[in-house]
Image (cartoon, rainbow, N blue to C red; front, top):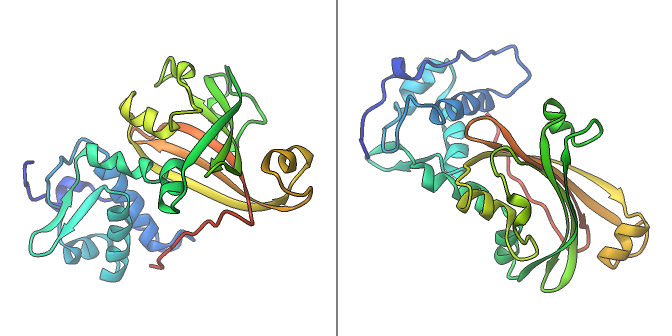
Length: 256
């Protein structure tokens, strides 16, 4: 690790738009995230102090602290008392996506994860596929439908779209055994830096009810996600319907 102290001029900070409806802390976070994923910083480099960053962005230190804490949670930086804010190696950043895999979620709940592959096909992205992939129409993807189980009890029904340009041969993997995010990280060495979630609720249709062993019209928690690489490319988008009586989705957002 270099231990270089990064100067504000090296960061080429994008000014904050105070008229934007986007929270200030999120604007700071997004700008720093892009900088951390650029070639201008290296593992072990030290970011400027909270005070210097607050002055550079024209915001309060609480806003900076909130933005930095979110980057810490995503394993992009680590804060060391008496030392400063240190840029993490890319190898450590991979833990961001792995910690959010279904396998790790189940382990955190004390359950054994298992998947049953219901369908798998290769085709190109089409209109009507997840909105996050609208700019990728015509490009090859793997569509993977799996029943997700915890301790052999069905918890969710997932349909994932994985872009194949960065991971050729992905369809040969057995996703009844392997975690998708672990394969992307460990086999293809892809670094996922952002996973965006949208949450909604629906009533189960007959097929969902049958596969999840619930009554028709029982409530389902639907989590739509897309995962972005450190290059800015979208690598995967999925829609997962979870049993509302067995699965709880928790997220924490700090205000700026």
